[in-house]
Image 1 (cartoon, rainbow, N blue to C red):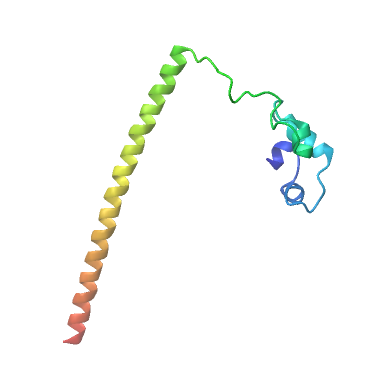
Image 2: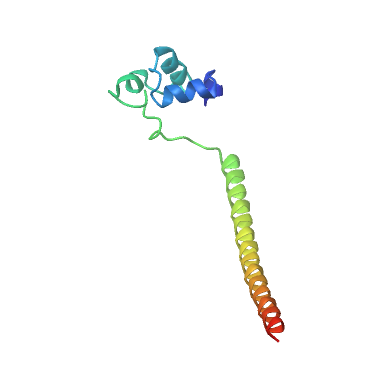
Length: 114
């Protein structure tokens, strides 16, 4: 965010943490990131956060675009399932390795006691 607004990380951090007062220049740059951000709200906390209530407005998505989005979502879900299965297999393998290591340590302890 600092870079996008043209600040060094250090300067940005000082502004955000309140070590340096927030100047109108900073607020203008912040509000310029999205034309819907209400400058007055950012500066004073008064009014609405956004100039228009675009969060509640409806948007029409063409069917072909929606189809692509659905296919991508299905693909991501399938990948998530694969990852979950692989993680389960890895957990099982780790448990088996721990058991085998414990047996080896027990055997080594028994052999040393003899």
